[in-house]
Structures are given as structure tokens and as C-alpha cells.
Length: 258
Image (cartoon, one colour):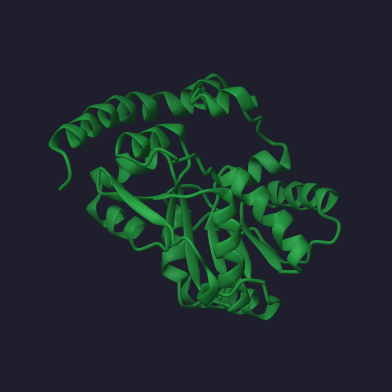
């Protein structure tokens, strides 16, 4: 397994409305994460879409939190297009669900232990069942569905102890944005694992929510599919954030390098 000292091609980032977004690939996710896991490092990997970037624009504290992560990958095609507009011609989308699938396959092959934190118990049970069907040799050492409320300090310490005792070196966190990003950053240095904020990946893998066809995902139309699936939940988000993102990013382009 590659060590951090042997890693080549460091991950480059470019600011998109203040958020440092990585010019990455699934290979880089796997390579860097396995190297960090081998050394039991505590790391934070996020996957940003337009919604997350605009939440950071509106909330300076959330912006600081995102930029405190080790890597923020472009989960949505609009961010990949934005990176290309900034001169990164080879920028590609690196979304949470697909990164999760790539990491689980790599962990199974490398013999790296994994854990899952988040979701309802029903979703988590379905998720674990689906993962075991696809990766029969994967070492799943931790799984926990937390209560839908803030944990007490004692409860939180117990969770950290359970994760540590399990030996999980890759931890997939599905609490929804921004709760999962906040949770991970609060536990960097306390949970000695590579932590991924993967949100909807739990529901997709568990089969609770359908994913857009591959052609829609690659052409930047996944939002249309998701909006059609959950119009009430997503309408306000898309109407609020998408036009503002386009206008603000065009201003960034016209202003040139800071």
C-alpha cells in the first residue's frame, strides 16, 4: 500500500466562491485515502455541490469549516464545469456515492477495515446488507445509527470509543449536510480514521432512493431527476441557490484571479 511519503500528484484546489474545491479523480480519492488509512491518520473528505457552496457563501463559519477539511471534491457537475472555467481543463466530477463505491471496492481488495455512521437503523441495515452482497470479503467493523438529536458529551465520547475499539480506518458518515460535515470536523483528531461525508450515498446504496441514469449524471442533469423525485424538498433549495450561484460565479470569472 502507498504511504503518504510516496504519494505523487498532490491534489490541487481552486477557489469557487471562496470554497477550495479539489481538481481530483476517483483514483486520487482511493490513493490518498488508503495511504492515510494505512498510517491511521484522522482526515476529513467532503463532496460539495452548489447547495453546499452557497450555504458557505451565506455562512462564514460554514465556509471556514469546509476549508478546514483535507479535501473538498466537486460532487456536482456545475462545480466541475466551474473548475474548467477557471483553467482546470481536466477537472471532473467526484461525487460522494461513486467515491463510496470506489473506496469500498478498494478497501475490500486492500484488507482495510471500514465503518458506517448515520442514517436510520432501517436504512443502515439495508445499506450493510447491500454492501455485503457486493463485497463479501469487506471487513465491516463498525455500524451505528445515532439518535435524531444532539448527543450528550458522554454519549459522544462513547461513540468515539466504540469507533476506536472497532479498528475502523475508513468511516463513511451519512448524516446529511451540514450535520455530517460539522460532525466530522468536530471529530478530526479524535477519530483516527479517514472520514467521508457522503450524505445520500447511504440511501442510494441501500436502495431507498433511485439514482438518475448515468447519462443524466454525466451531463449535469441529475438535479432534474432529483427534483422530479423530491419536488417539495428540493424546490426551495434549487430556486434559492442555483441562480445565485451562476450570477456570483460569473462575477468571480469576470473579476479574474484574486
